[in-house]
Image 1 (cartoon, rainbow over the protein chains, first blue to last red):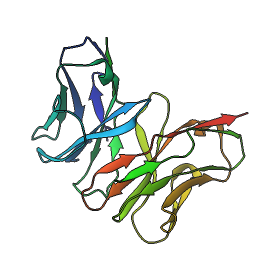
Image 2 (image 1 turned 45 degrees about the vertical axis):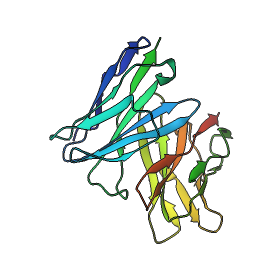
Image 3 (image 1 turned 30 degrees about the horizontal axis):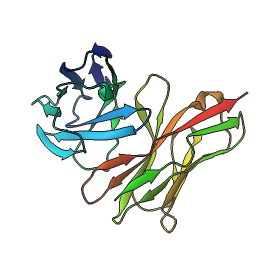
Length: 114
Length: 113
């Protein structure tokens, strides 16, 4: 069974631009979560989707948004990029909506904002 | 507010020596506890989890952790480390109340030859 895939793996943008990251969960998984990982802040939860509905949201500004499609694939968008948005963005999928289940992580998208 | 503290940002250990990575959390509600490992240039992989029942949890790669409710701790241990254990280890807490997950800032495990 294929794992979680994220595209692109690397991305370079400039301040003020917007970016869209994509995540394809493991087949059959309906829950997708997004995290931002930086050396200073560690891993921070962005949001979680289940069956195309946002279930949970972390403490990020409105420039960060996401969505989930009917095939469970998810995208996250960051508008008006800032230097501080440079990070590794990780996507994780799980079978259902309860927090008891294991999350499977993708390799991440490394975003660099210049 | 809920939080997760990993007391050591880096831990150097000689190969075949035992190791303990510490994790403390604060929460006013019941929690689920996890340890994840991140190898260089990879995503996170679940090592083990505590949901309920026995407070000693065994995971993959010979790791185990013990949940101590009175001390709000969930320390990770391995009796004998290998060079392949070089990685960053994250403790995570998921709140029963709202399912939000909070990660610690990670502990880098350096295995010395």
